[in-house]
Length: 297
Image 1: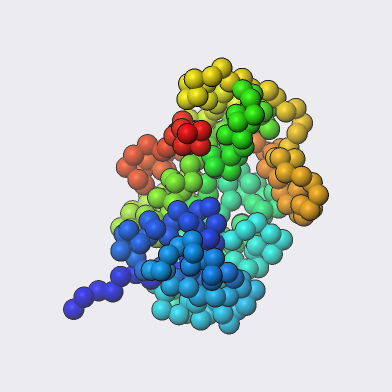
Image 2: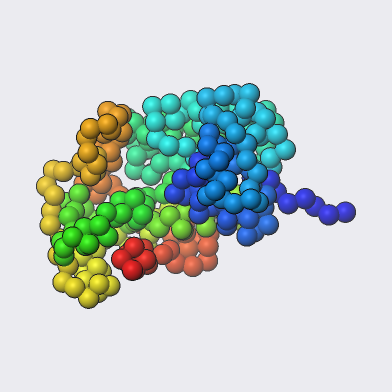
């Protein structure tokens, strides 16, 4: 008698992390079902081997249908005012349909505790609490600032000159590479022995960081070595993360979230380093060098 491979329901599959996660799950022999509002785009991005379940996070009946037969679920959705309501609906559908294990991509640790200083962090905390109440086997991943997000504009700046601008003063950040987040998520989903061992040794969320905390002058030094050009860093003063994009058309909620992120990073909250990635993957985390080497190629 053969054991059927796990069926993983994935929300947020067409985003930056989802597009990394889905092929990694498939490489481990898992079947993947994607829950999406844009089935055509999901098919183009993720290929013919992915099962598509069309639906909206605000549709409990569609969530129930998508959860039927799934053994695992990966929970990710964009930061919006309804994040907590929508993600809790996924948890409730998964519990009702007998999904055995959930991995939630949460906010950075410093946005969640202490409560009350981050709109997105407080929303993620509500979902984490709902997972505990549901009594489902689960793992919560709290990644630090992503290299691909926070450092994403560096390549554009270096196309225009030899200056990169720091959005958070002289604060140091232990950036985490999205590829490491995806690799950890696969282990958290499919490696039950590892999950149980970590649960016994260090219960609670898995806080994911890089192995070093860098400020922007240090990143400029890395960029100098990679490009062969003298790159320098210029402080942006009080400019916040939200000001990287035109204010026009940006929802006020997102502007507030970005401003809160920036204030916390500026205060040094994103500097801490954990060994979670190395403990889970058996290797050191990817460094900012690895990201910049790809981004600047």
